[in-house]
Image 1 (tube, rainbow, N blue to C red):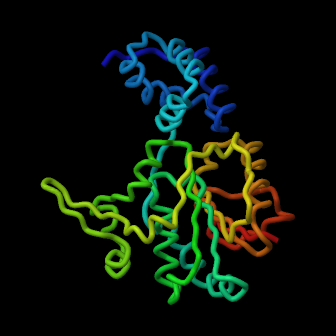
Image 2 (image 1 turned 135 degrees about the horizontal axis):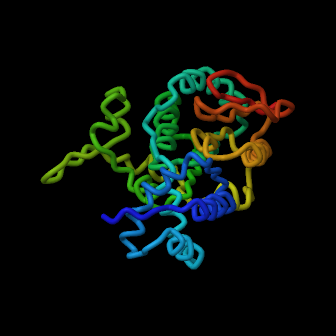
Length: 274
């Protein structure tokens, strides 16, 4: 594969473009990462320079190349029951939330859902802790900017290594073991998949028009790519979608220094709407 040089002026163009499109703030130190991760794509397109690729991005009206670009420079690392301390906290909060309900309806947003482990974990958690789970109207909105990871999430198929650390009881209740000639994979059962609405969504540029508020919002390890201005704006919009007392879950490496008048830190990157 031919290694193509990324010139400083080209990197500045990409940095401005990705910030305007999806809010990702690339530092000067990310130039090497961008060059390394995009060289393969330039070769696939038979392009001779990063300026040619920038022009290709600008001229792509479908949005597909933007999604490929974002996927290349960001990292989609996730797992089932990630951030264990948050699930432990949620065990105690769930009873309080259920007791406050006038009707058996739960609405949750998994923002930046990647390949689906997070929204499916939420459902498995609720199934495990609600004795009358089947009697509840549960809907999870799961959004991501990458069509590639969303297609994986919608399929709900995972390798054995993805579920090996999960309790056997949860695996048996939530997955179907599927054998093929060459592999074994685990498929999320239909009654769980049908409770998740997967949507392509840009947290920075798409409108926050939702009919109802959410009982909780998960947005974990997404804002690490954003600058302070974008984070502040996004958290403010999340806050308007949470009723009083509802939690907002961030990633363990993320913390808030603003919105203290509307959000209270409870621990483990869990914030409560005041």
